[in-house]
Image (tube, one colour):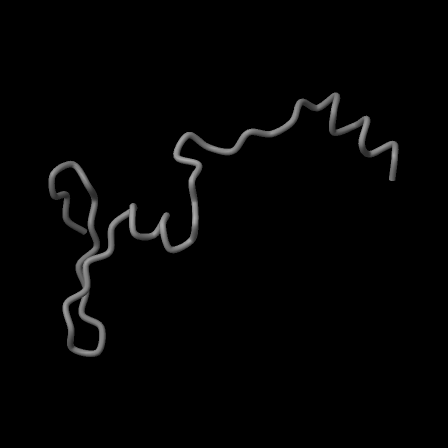
Length: 53
């Protein structure tokens, strides 16, 4: 693990080729757009919806 320009990067060899993996590339590949976390509905809303099941 290397820290380059404030960005953590994983350097590895895959099939003999150098590969650099960054947090941004993982987020892009997995389509994570939630840098600040996940917004959950309030407990009240959750329990209201549970009663409808």
